Amino acid sequence: MTPKTDGDSISLDAILDAHYKKIREAQNARYLEAQAVGPFVLEDCMFEFSVEKGWSGDSKISAVHLKAKHPAAVLFIESPHCAYVTSDEAATITLVRIRRDKLRGKFHSRMESSDDTLIHITSFLFDNYGRIAQGVFDGPALCGSGAWGDELNRGDLLVIHEFSVDERFRSLGLGSEMLRRMFASKYVQPPETILCWPSPVNAPRLTQAEHDAVKSRQIAFYRKNGFRRIGHTEFFGYSPDPTHPSHAIAAIDDANEKPAEELPHLSDEYLRALMCGGYTFF
Image (cartoon, rainbow, N blue to C red; front, top):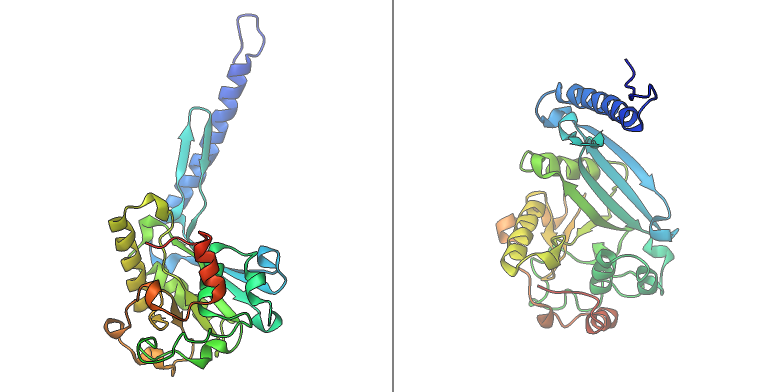
């Protein structure tokens, strides 16, 4: 029966209440349908790839997105006048591909229009031609494990830009499965190397101890999945080539990071960014 006022006219509040009730019932039904699948099981995940060309407005940069979806990720959110279910995404990863062969001589200037992650990695490790910066591996004091060398100059430059796993599904193998699927996909081919920079998000909100703890967990995760430190820098690399020397190095034997002031190879662009306050170290 349609709610009415004393004057036999339909009350606006009553109409809204009836409308919101229908919304809540529909959204709750969607939520219950999703939850009927049961708790999170890795094998029940659906994985979806997508490619974004012209990422960050640059035709020489593209991005590969991988999403893991599972019904257990769905949440039912309700307030007095709103009800909805959240996405079923349990994890996402974005791999950025830079066609550095098309940016010779203007590599750093083109990276300046991207974001902090790409600026930080590219200006630290590479020269303006997209090649490994002179001095990164010079001498035993800087070469680290010795696993990396000229292969970092081959192919496109691949960088893990974003990687997130819902807190509810961590330590269940989902993060490792995301990396495995990305590396096994057609979007990653030898002799390309995947780079990453373990760095906690929302870093300004963390205490020094919290930051160090999160970073240590991230480094342990990447090492478990085959990444090894590049020299003594804060960056890590993964080679899809199973014969690459990095795969013969146990995680416990990987090189340690050295403070920036002990790495004399830093590029002029990187030092300039540091002096301008472009980066924050912890």
